[in-house]
Length: 241
Ligand code: GLP
Image (cartoon, rainbow, N blue to C red; front, side):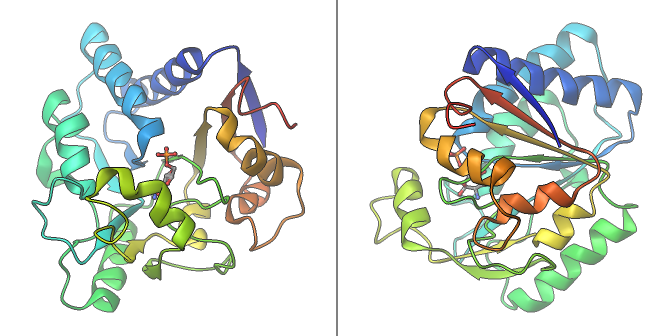
């Protein structure tokens, strides 16, 4: 695991945006795994700028997001599809037909999960998977105790994750209870993994991911098994290392 620590959140976000834009410039038909959450908002702003400044084409890129809430209408403003369309795809000219997320309104989440795995396989697998980390060490929506070999499936969200995400909904009651997420095994199949964590509220999870024992109680610790995992941190997220 390569750990890169930057003095500020801005520098860490820029480093991640540069890695993504350089990857697309070098391989315009890259298959990218993408992530959502507050951490990625500034990364996508900076990525859009980097792509447009260097004239990097995105028409051939294919993207697969890590996860999506389940039980929401697709046009609900808090779906990850809405987030991605408004924060990245629409603004940077990614062809929407080459961008994939699990369907938030899937009638059969088991079939939807299997179909999502098949789409990733058919695309030739993920070249670079971008990741954030939850305060409890989750990646995607793989909550603590998720199997390290898990594949895309429906997961019940923990109360702490629902509390952390209620800011995007009309209170905790309105926050979804379920999500469809790539599994930890799915994530580990990506050829490169790139995790960004900023802020002191992530310091404990970051320490457990990097220095703690490998185990299901900190799903992000599974990245210790990955041959090409890069973790980008700001100084605040690195304080407990
Ligand atoms: C969310 C997402 C994760 C994200 C994490 C951290 O619930 N499912 O993919 O990495 O939690 O979110 P944030 O960046 O808002 O702290």
